[in-house]
Amino acid sequence: MRSFLDVRTLSFITGIIYLILFLTMVYVYTTRKTYPGFREWVVAFFLAFAGLLFISLRGIVPDYLSIIVGNLFAAAQVVLIDYGLVAFTEGKQRMGWHILSLAFLMTMFLYFTYYSPIVNIRIIIFSGIIALYCIHCIIIIYKRIPLILRASNWLLIVALSFAALWYALRFFFTLFLEDKISDFMVAGSVHGLTLIISFAANILIALGLIIVNLQRVEHDFLMVKNEIKTLKGFLPICSSCKKIRDDKRYWTQLEAYIRDHSEAEFSHGLCPDCMRKLYPGLAGE
Image (cartoon, rainbow, N blue to C red; front, top):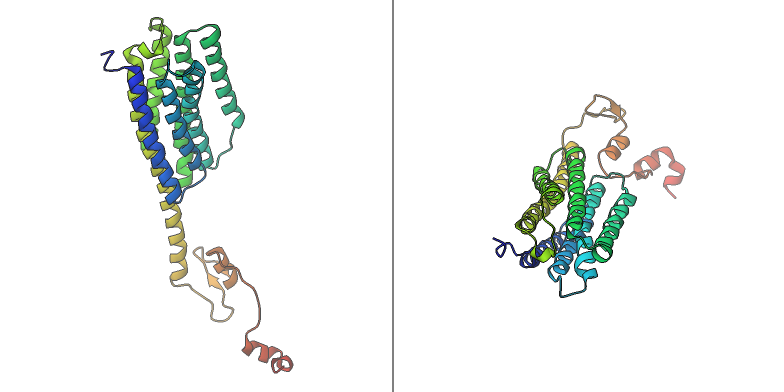
């Protein structure tokens, strides 16, 4: 079982999966309409790829790359997904919390790598941060996505809930049940399973992010279509003053109605007939 769930091999394979997801996100970003936050999601999957690549090279590259930078990049992925979701849902960003979280992670990893090397504590800290960010992402999706799209995205909720639950279980398992780990590359099966669950969840998360972007494209298209449909239908108009009766049965000036239901703006002038009628002396000049 230990060889089947070899951490180094799984880290490398997971990194390749993240590279494919990153290239997929890049394709969508460069060829389709996207919204605020999607760029951060693209960068998130690149950092996930780079982080797992560094982690898989543990013992081959310096520790500050394979441990500090690798785990910092892996954690930054979920931070950027969170940041992108807030931007996508037009919420208020709290950049200070993101910087503080990553600074705390880096500080703890530096301390428990060089000053007091304890692999278990590094796993506990990393798992706790990932679980908390996944939970926050779920809250954003559950509360704010329906306000933007009038629909939910259950694929994202399920994928992030699965990831949050697993990292929470890993947190408590490592804290209370795990024996001391001397080298992460030969850690137990739980940590190999973590990598498998991680790339499975991230595949679903990437699909969910692409789908939520498409949901918004569809939502905006239907809104524009409804506006066009309103202008194409029968409009009750006064034969004398030319006011239009709207859906609430209020009579509105023609210019105001068209301005409110389209992107048209008006500039006023006089046609030749009205010029001759109102200013006969100027009409012939």
